[in-house]
Amino acid sequence: MNFALYRELLAVQRIRRLLIVGMIARIPHSAAGVLLTLHIVLTLDKGYAAAGAAAAVMTIGIAVGAPWRGRRVDTAGLRRALIPSVVSETIIWSVVPHVSYEWLLPLVFVGGLLTLPIFSVVRQSLGVLADGNQRRTAFALDAITTEVVFMIGPAAGAVVATSGFTVAGLTVVGVSTSLAGLFLMWFNPPTRSAVPSAEG
Image (cartoon, rainbow, N blue to C red; front, side, top):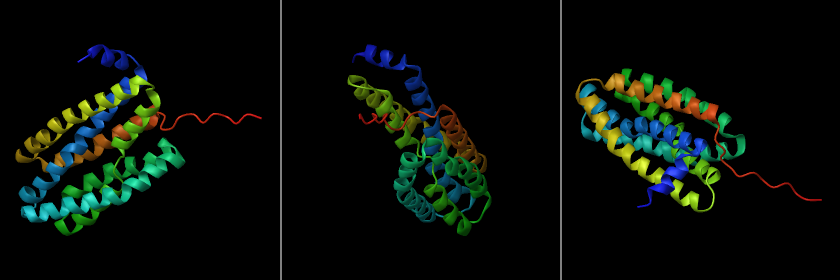
């Protein structure tokens, strides 16, 4: 493996910053599923079937919201498109741990609907910031960081939940995701290539 390609890529500040923010933002997302499942089972004293139903509702919300969120990034720009996610992530995931199962279901649906589109934003931005052969290296590095995230996040979520801190854990998921969204809004990485001006 040629690590020089990765070093060269990480020397570009905007790409390095995007990958770091993307990795940090994905950790709470990857922990959310485990935390939500164990919160329903351990804290609300419901079964795994109920937890699975909640996960399915959240997944449906994500599936419904993803195309709309992606289009908003494309048409309204990254900053304006992220505002609903930044606001909703903190509010919803701070409320979810304190409500009954019946209220939790619609909340996690809305949470899925308005989830921070960190995966698509990072991939889209990398495609713009990296060019030529660098683009393939950038996508490979993003895939590596994503694998690392999905080793850390669920394990951390399980430790937090089985230690009896599902309420705090879910709240941290929302707050940290919102903070990552705010940083993305400040950083404002490009999500589309510059359109060449028409001649004549």
